[in-house]
Amino acid sequence: MLQSFTAHIQQQHLFPTGQQVLLAVSGGIDSVVLTHLMHSARYPFAIAHCNFHLRPSDCDRDEAFVRKLASDYAVPFHVAHFNTRSHASSHHQSIEQAARQLRYDYFEQLLQQHHYAAILTAHHRDDSTETFFLNLLRGTGLAGLHGILPVQGHIVRPLLPFSRHDIEGYAAQHQLLHVEDSTNASLDYLRNQVRHQLMPLLRLLQPAADHTLQQTILHLQSTEQLYMALLESLKVQLLHSQPDGSLILDLSTSLPAPLNHHSQPSIRQQLYFEILKPFGFNADTIANILTASQSGKTFQTPSHTAYLDRGRLILHPNTTPTESLPSIHIETISPQGFNPKQLPSTQAAFDADTVKLPLRLRHWRPGDRFQPLGMPHGTQLLSDYFSDHKYSQPDKQSQLILVDANDNILWIVHHRTSHPHRITSYTRQILLIEIY
Image (cartoon, rainbow, N blue to C red; front, side, top):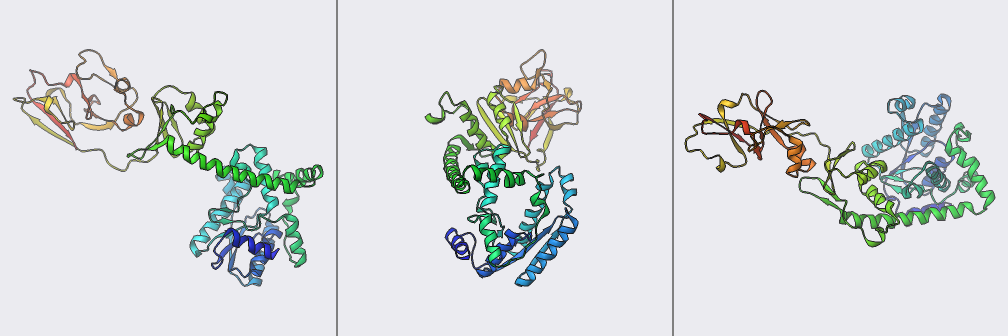
């Protein structure tokens, strides 16, 4: 097994073999065998252990065992203690989710602090098969069926080619001591039900089940790689970056002929899901986007806001504005010889006697009304004005409004002033406003 282990690492270039790596060691048989293999292959490593305090006496026993293991191999040892139940409760997570997050966050922290080349875990082939069934039972897409990958970021799993039977045989051959997690036999956990009930039944029905399942997982990994390559090509065609940092997805663009087949309406939904998933959009939201027809309809995720705009979906990152509003310069001038038609878009002029100071800038609000210049009677919803002038949703959100002391709208900045405050032949003084 040692020869196959080192050959696999070298052939797959799993980690730089001359640099020190970090081994995640629980004290169970899998991580003990990984530690022995790494030592026998003369790879430099350190050991990290997590005490989750979920089984008080067992957890302390495990920590003491791994501490001695590190001492026996004369390698650096790191340990962290977690109040896992409290973390799970405060973060609304299951115990398993909390433990996983705490464990990997700690490993990443050690990697950064001590400059380890990689984090090695002892996941093996049976773990990958069990993960395949767990995801299948819970519901998943293609990515959930590829089992455990040999490399994910800094995480490396060099035991994936080996079965549980291989690992147990190696431990027996080398008389390796290990600790046993009492929960491994409990059927309260779905993974253990898959391990102790489903897998034995599959092996009974098909003796070659382990081999055929592993081959299927490898085929799915290859299929996913091809799928992602095609998806990236389609992203380039459909998703366009804008100078202001936004992204535009044209929902009306025709897809390549094989994807436009009338009997496959879910293809478009799946494609947009894959494109928008990195921005936090789930399948239900994608379905709502595709059935919505009203321009201006908004969809939000923690990281992005998307707006429908005449057959396009415009995505903006959710950022907190850091810049202050523009400054207002106010000047009173004589109307003699003044021509308001010659003003640049950064300036506006009003009858000074009709304006109540002070003035301020703000963003528009739903329900805002004003009487645009040229409308002698009545008022108009600002939202209707925006629609008439084909504002996109981002344009609406960024539009500034100049209001007086009573919050009356004087000016849609750079665009339209208010009719009641216009300059007439009776104007005695002009209030000249400049935004800069």
